[in-house]
Length: 591
Image (cartoon, rainbow, N blue to C red):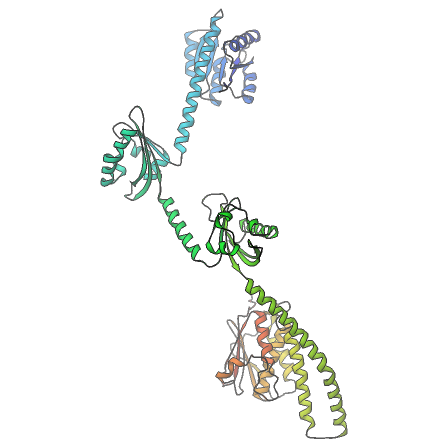
């Protein structure tokens, strides 16, 4: 083993003598490295740059004597060995030096022997200094250890206990010191320790196992217990509370049991981003055996892009204002090369300290949903194309028919002409509504704060302009001004269709009432109403109770309501008419 260097600072205002001391000391011991300072100020400068093992100082120096220098050193390094090596020897100086905390005192004499004595004194004080420092480090290590450590004398009474030990049992240190170990166990456990455990320690010098400790408050707990007998007959005890560990083990068993019963794949990544746990469903999905998965990075089953998105999601969760979990779509690459679309619901493992310990995720196979979305998209595309073709192909013959009808009406007057005109109007409205449903029925534009009464008046004027006997009124509880969040154009279209429905079924003298409640608004009339057994059919495309009805008006209403995230319900008004209740509406409240 390589010998460490002993760094010595020699302070003496006589440069020649200081150099001589350095020469002799380094000859006496190969491991001595001596630096020289000719004044206390010079010494402090060197002291700030080098970690010394010992200081040798003269007494009589300009501006500051050796005692003053020693007192200043003691303020900085209370335990550092300091030897007063002076030619001014007296009982008074020796007494003063001892009071100031000098480690050793040597009077300068002639001859070479004084340097040998000085070297031996340096060796002794440095060895003692290092031994005491090592003991102090050990003491601090024991005192700050997380495991409980105590020392019992040969009679079984405590002579030392660290903070962790007293905390485990719920005592203050001075409450334990001098007490017998029996206070930490119930009577039956005392017998176990006395009759079985201590004899094992006497025979082998060591015992370890699990015992049941007794806290100061009377509660018991499982403990990992280790006993070691010293050569002098004392007993070193180390104790670790197993309560939290057993609780974690129980929690882990429950977690694993729960995870194995979940049909969705579940995984846990450690802080290094490696698979630490996967359930059976995960193994089945990816096709690798569990041994291959555990310890592997996510790139085993995820593309580089998927891993990047997962790391970005994890970064958001770990940010100071991030969510507790994030859900995003990825593709899992199975062992046989199949790309499986999944939803990854990711969160982080609970912290037991300050450091990130890993993440957990639950995968949901969305293959069927993706296939259905693709089919629906294809169907919508075909429907849009079909509606466009139908509209285009119908528009030309409709225009011809309408033109011919206009010519016939100019040439003659027949009772058959009005029904023909009505039929043509119906075909045109049918075409327009069908196009709207296929192209725009599922989407809305931007939503803004809309004055409900103003939109109601505009929609009513559009529908009831030529029906002077129809009446629009507001329920008594309706506020004078109500603002809601909606797409203005679509809201007006919704209201126009509901008003048209009331006029068609309630007649030209129908009274339509609009009211507002806590969750939305309603529109009702005093017409014949809708039979209860037919109410579930009114939003079906093409359904109408009128021979000349096209059956798309209420379907459009239902689509607009759904696009806003609202709900609609058909009921009966107080007068027996139809009542449409729209709920889930967001109101703008006055601050």
